[in-house]
Image 1 (cartoon, rainbow, N blue to C red):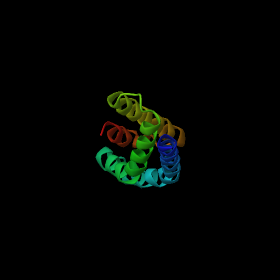
Image 2 (image 1 turned 180 degrees about the vertical axis):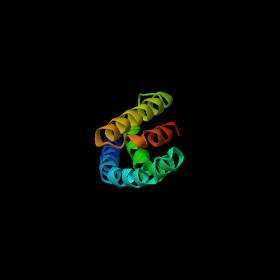
Image 3 (image 1 turned 90 degrees about the horizontal axis):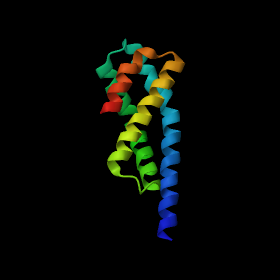
Image 4 (image 1 turned 120 degrees about the horizontal axis):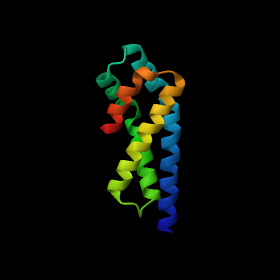
Length: 107
């Protein structure tokens, strides 16, 4: 019973994290686009706006995959987030935000 409940909660954490990222990403990219591309300010802005959703997503996925070592998961999750963000910004035409996104990913 506990295992099923934990998996349901982990799945809901993951789903809420994805929905929050989808909802917050346009707003998180809008403000740094107006700032002129200062990487430190952009990275801080991304962290403030998307940090909670990224932590919720990471916690849900980590709970769904308990056999993966924590250090391997952190490295692969951070790499995945950086790559997907870079692709998203490049496709949407916000290439001046790439240094700020890389700064967020390395923190």
